[in-house]
Structures are given as C-alpha cells and as structure tokens.
Image (cartoon, rainbow, N blue to C red):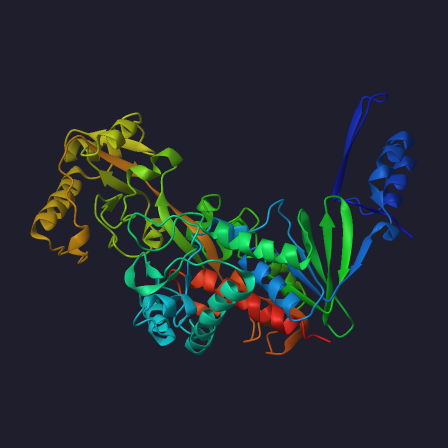
Amino acid sequence: MHTHLAAPWAKVSLQKETLIVVFYLISDASDLLEMTKFKTLSLSVVLACLPFAVSAADIEKINTDVVVVGSGGTGLSAAASAHQHGAKVLLIEKQAFVGGSSALAGGAIAAGNTNPQKRAGTQNVSDDGFVNIWIKDQDRSFPGADESMPDEARMHKIINEFDKTVNWMEKDIGHKFAVPRPFGYGGPNYAHAPAESPIPASGRGSSPAGGRFVVKAFTTYLDNAGVPIMTGTKAEELITDSKGNVVGVKAMKGKQPIEIRAKAVILGTGGFARNKELLEKFVPSYAPYTDVSNATPGATGDGIIMAQKVGAAGFKDGWVMGISPVSTKRELNNTFRTKNVYKDDVFVNQDGKRFVKEDLPYIVDPIANQKAAWAILDSKDTNKAALLAKYNDPEIVVSGKNWEELAKAMGVPAAQLKATMDQYNQACKDKKDPVFDKNPEFLVPFEQAPFYAVRVIPSTMGTIGGVRTNDKFQVLRADGSVIKGLYAGGETANRPFYRRVYTSGTGLGLAYTSGRIAGENAAQEK
C-alpha cells in the first residue's frame, strides 16, 4: 500500500547536507525512493520526508447524519435546522473563524408579515409587495444576462418562506431584531436588522458588519445544542457511492486528512467573489477587482466546484452582488460617502461625463464598465478637504482651483467636465435633473473651490451563480434528476433569483432560508 503525502508539496531543510528540496506533485513515497536510484536525492533526504507521509490508516474517519460545509448564514441555519429536526450534525469551516460573508454583511433580512412587523403595527408589508419590488428591480439589470432569469415562480415561493425564517430565528434561535424599517432605497419597512446593531444615520437599512450579531445568535444556539463546529477544516472532495449518491466529504484539518461519512452533505460555501478564474469566466469586468470585495476571503467557489465534479448542473452565466464604489486608499472612502451613502454624489468617467443615476441602490456595474471613474467633491467639508489635499495622483486623488484645472489633473476633456458640472450645479438649483432624473432630495451642488476628484473602483459583496437546485435545495443534474444526499443554498445556488442586479435584504434572506429548508430536508435522508 502506498503512503500519501499530507500536502501537495513538502519542504525539507537538512543542516548536514545544506540542501533544501521542494517536492511538487509527488504522489507517494515510492516516487521518493525511486529518485534515490538515480542519485537525485540522498536516502537521508527521503527519510526526512517520511514524517510528512500519511497512510490510509492515518485518515481520521467520522460518521454523522448531516455534514454542513461552510459556516456563513446558509451553513449556520442549515446546521441549526438539521439538528432541530433530529439529525446528528457536524459543521466544518475552512477559515479559522465562523460567519463567512454573512458576518461582514449589514445583517438586515427582507420579509413581510413577520412577528416583529405585527408587533410594531407595520402596514403594507406583504410578501407579494416585497417580491414585486424584487422582480421590478431586475429591470435595471446590466445588459447581456440570460433572459430566462430570474425564475419568478421560485422568487414567489422563497419570499413566502422569508417571514417563516425571521420568525424561526427570533423564536427558536434567539436572535433579536430591531423594529423593522426601510432598506436604503426607501419604501415600506421590510428590513429586519439586528437589534444590537447601531441604526444608520439615514434611519434606513443596516450598519456595516451588523451580520456579526446574527452569526453570534446562531453560534450560541449551536453551542448550547452541542453541535460541533470544526474550523480550519477545508472540504476538498465529495464522496459518492456506486450509484452517484453523495455519502460524505473528504477534508483537511491542517495537515490531517479527514473522511466524514454522512447521509447528507449541505454546501453553504458561498459564491466565487474571491476566485479570479471564475470571475474571468462569468464576469470578466470584475476580475481585476477580485481582492476588492466585502466577501469573506473564503468565497472561492469551493462548493460549486466540488458539486460540479460529481455531476451537478451549473448555469451558463453569472454575475456579482456589487456593493459600492471605493477608493484604492481605504482612508478616503468616507470622503465621498455621506449619510445618504452615495445618492448625493456625482460620478464622472474618462470622458468627463456623468454615466450613472447616483441615487440607485447599487451603482458599481456602470463603474466596472468605465475605463476610469471619479467621485467629484468640493471643499465645503474642511476636514475631508484637508485629507484629500494630501494626495496628488490621478489614480488616487487630484485637485484643481476650477473645473478646467481639475480636468487637466484627471486627464479628461476640460470643456466636457466643466459643462458636466455646470449642468449638474444648475440642476441642483432647479431641483430637476434633466440627465438622469435623480431625486431632487439628493441634488447637492459642488461650488466651493478647490475641487477634488477621487478615483473610484467597484467593490462586491458576493456573486450570483452556483449549481441548480429544487425547492428543497437538493442539487440537480443537467437532466433534472436529484443527486441524492447533496444539498446547496445561499450563493452556492442563488442564480435563479436574479438577472444581473442585487436587491437589498435578499442575499441574507436566501442564505438563512435556504439553509433552514435544506437542513430540514437533509435531516430526513435515509
């Protein structure tokens, strides 16, 4: 029997031989011994390598009913739900910390007809009302998407589960919600933000990283329930039987290989916002910004890749959940972010022209498709102006005493930038925007010289794509048949719910709801 290295490479440094040897893609110890025959390596070097070797007997074997891969919102809710429905559950997470992208999100979940809304006497918040907002939102999708998306029938079905999820999280998990309020785009009070998270200055939506309070509620529940969470454990391969059913997962906990056998595997590994290769395939305009994301560093598409290797069907296109324009210098982000986020800003491109209606909920898709983009600022806020004045680089910030001077520093047509800003400032006085029909509430003039231009790039919070599932969140093959024992939710399976635009509150709603549904069904696997 061959013995296998615990990692694809091993580094060995021997003082006596003053030799450093790096082995790449050596499959077993017999390869090492073979190399000694040709004097490639001395036997002492080979012997030094052997402590890195692991035999089949050294693989830790674990048996459970349900193994959940990934500890973001999908995985946490799946683990809690599966446990609640009688299954023995193990949750594994490749990062050293729990929460995934959900911990980094604002934490507000969209829903109608919930217990928190009923207690608050909230009016006009039906499930149908929200799904209509969600569907209508898709009309402003970036061009070129699969026109069969979204699947409106599935959207209606899932939104009818969002309120059940909110009530379940409150009653069974012990999470506390704030009094429901509007999302950032306004409208009725559909946003269920964490009670512990500060209320934003606008009174809408949720504060940055409020999701950590939701994660805390779930981890407390799982800890009290005795459900183990194994961090630092990367799933590498799904285990299938002779019929193609999924019966477990192979993983690495550090250098220790683990084989977990289970009746069901639930993939809650998130999307591919941190996988440049997949971004280049599905959303090439965002590939240069792979590292500019609010998604967890672990969002590299692991679950999607593993599932497709055992026959899961994917989708022909994908997209991103764009979140906000950012500076390449983090300290400058708040110079163009206001209490209204970016609604009262003005952005121009390489031609010195406005290119987006700035009061839309998300504006990064147009930014990603410009050769260059800047946020325009003036000096009315002296603290911000002092910070901006520290830079003089068209890739970061430039300044000018007038629009022509600023344009020259930016490298854009001076006459066009002046015309753009003159027109915009006049629109602010008239309270009517003839170019993009921006809400008059957010028409704020830029008149105090010197003027500044902050170079902006797009950032994301996740992706739209994944593998095909049914309403139980069982993973499907291309012919529509179920891969028995395999479930996926959240960003690992969210393609049917969008075209090419994200709607606030739906990502977390999908994560916690799909996890809850998948966990319940996985617990019933025989």
